[in-house]
Every structure is written in C-alpha cells, then in structure tokens.
Image (cartoon, rainbow, N blue to C red; front, side, top):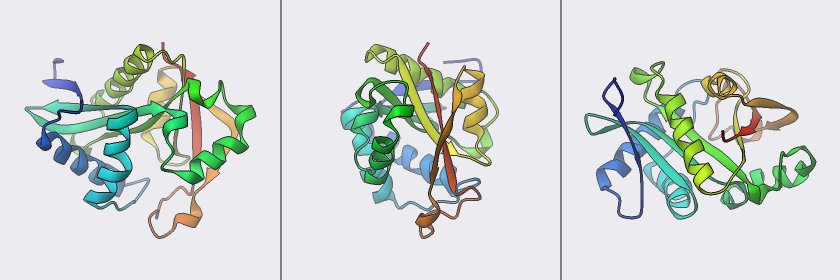
Length: 193
C-alpha cells in the first residue's frame, strides 16, 4: 500500500466478483469520457477485455479502501486476437515493430477513475505491468492510444517510451462505437526496464 492508501492487486482465476464489477465500472467510466467517448456494455467488457486478459495476460487493479479505482491490462501482442483489425494492422507493419509480435508485451489498457487521476496511480499501474512483463520474459512493450487528448502518451514518455513514427491507425470507421475527438491511434514502444 502506498502513502495515498492505494494498493495494487494482480487478478488470478479465483477472483472476487466485486473486483470484476469494479473493473467493469472503471473501464466503462474511463473510456466514456474524453478523448474516447466509447460505450461498452458489461458483457462487452467481460468478453472483450476481462476474459482474454484473465486467460492470456494480466489484470492489475488499483484499490482504495477495497474499491477498484484503476486498472491495467497487458498480454503478449500475438494473443490480442479478439481484435482482428488490430492483428491485420500489425501484420502490415511488422517491419516497424521492435521485435517479433510474440516477443512484445502489449500494454492494452490503463484507466483510472476521474476523481483519482493525476495522483500517480496510472504511472504505478504501468510500472506494475512492466513488472509482470519482465516476469514473463518480455524485453519490449508496445501500446496504442488516442493521438489527441490521451494522458497515456505523457505517462509512457516519462517512463522512456517513444512514439513510433509512421505507425498511425485510423479508427474513424468505428463511428457507431467511437465518437472520439481523435480518430487516429498512435503507438508507443519501449523496454520493460
């Protein structure tokens, strides 16, 4: 537990259902606001985020007084298969990657409830995922985020991450789910030091 009363918990198969409900709430609230403006049902979050990470990756929660206030997820890049468009984009850009996709840890999600942002929780969640990636044998990571309005860019850059020049993904065709102020996603790479 840190000085702000925040603790971090890596979720395993025998998870507390209240932690899953907290995860859903944080995910929905964090991505409903700027810059994403995305809408997810409970089922979307469970099937598209929770279950794949529980099976193939990592889920780390930030807790305050037992309540979930933040989350971080990661998995091997080649396992992030539920997103076929992402996999095709990566295949088309293999020459720009720092390593083979099976050797890259993909930092898929980081979110902190608005009332708890700007207190270092997001950065701590990133570092917790770096620790997980190192334990899994990864040396490199990648992540993607909104080109405009993302807090993640600054956090990753402060930890040594670099925006990958020329690797921009257009998501404007997802208008039914994404009303983002940024219809482009940038990629950041780095090492899991």
